[in-house]
Every structure is written in structure tokens, then in C-alpha cells.
Image (cartoon, rainbow, N blue to C red; front, side):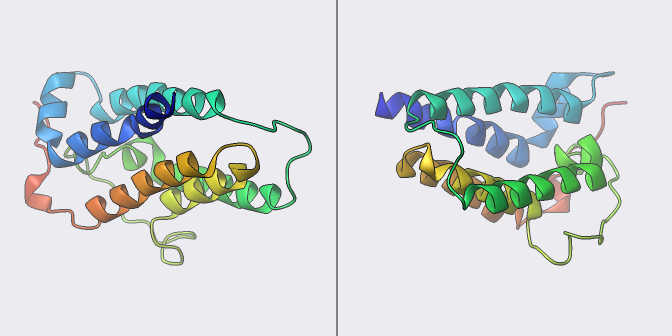
Length: 165
């Protein structure tokens, strides 16, 4: 069970890595008339479901109310996620700039205050769930986000995709 759960928890990260490093392939695979960011969002939601089901399969002590630390971590983590999505929109959140879209630079909170706020928010939300899920899977999932933070910190504009015309 452990290996299968680990694979499920890590499922999205090879996909994200491939999209980040080979955006032109994704744009071409999506084809003309299909928004690569929207398609990425749909696939990402499916992969997020795989992650959540994997984590749920090994969850323990699903008691209510959760531990006291759950509320501030989860609430602020989700606030960061929703705020990032609200400011960047679907294309900004789902690699639009890598797919050749023009995404305006955002400086409103949390940008400029918290580096990589969406990933920080996701990690905070995961840490909130430590009373329910085994530490090793929370750590593994969080390390996937740390890997993506590192990968995305070195974006080369020359490797961005050219939109299909």
C-alpha cells in the first residue's frame, strides 16, 4: 500500500515538470482552438483527486473537530491559494506564461510579501492535516511542491511556447 500511495501523492509532479520543461509540446498536443491552460487545469484537477484519494486511503483518526492547529494553517493556506487564483486567473495559475500567453505582473498581496504564495498555501494546508494523515505522505507531497518551487524559480523566457496560429 505504501508504494502505491506514494505514487498517488506524487502523481501530478511529473506532469507539472513536463509542462514546465516542454511547454511547446503541450501547446501542440492541445491543438489549435484549445486553451492549454484550461486543459492543464482539467488534468491537474483529476491528478489532485488522485492525490486526495491516495492520502485519504491511509488517513487515520478522522475525528471531528480537528486539532487546534488545523484551523489557522488550513484557513490561511486556502486563503493564499484562493487569493493567488483570484489575482492570476486560470491562465496565470496554470502556466499561461509558459504557453506563450501574456500574463500581467502582479504585486498585490500575497505577491511581494510571500515568495511562491500558492505553494506556501498548499504546504500549509497539508501540514494542517497532519492529525489525520501519516507524516511521510504529507512530507512527500510537500517535497513535491518544494521541487516545483525550485524548478519554476529558474524560468528561461527563451523556452516559452509559441502559440499555435
